[in-house]
Amino acid sequence: MSDAKITVIRNGPLRIEGSFEICDHDAQAFGLGGRTALSLCRCGHSANKPFCDGSHGRQGFESAVEARDLPPKA
Ligand code: FES
Image 1 (cartoon, protein in one colour):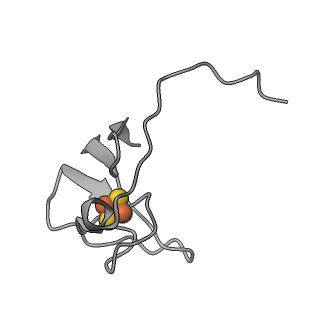
Image 2 (tube, rainbow, N blue to C red):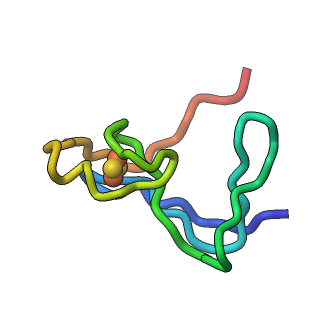
């Protein structure tokens, strides 16, 4: 069971902190080297997907979101 917090960084990645695992399409877990925080690319420019490598800044990625309520699950 994961207990994680994900923060949408303005003009940047998704920052995940806590207890989590990240798996590929085949459900194989990435070895995270004991990390309890890391950043996931949401700009599409990282050369190390799914992880952020800082390319968002060089590419001028812009995305600022505010928390909101989603509609009820259908
Ligand atoms: S969000 Fe950082 S490289 Fe994509």
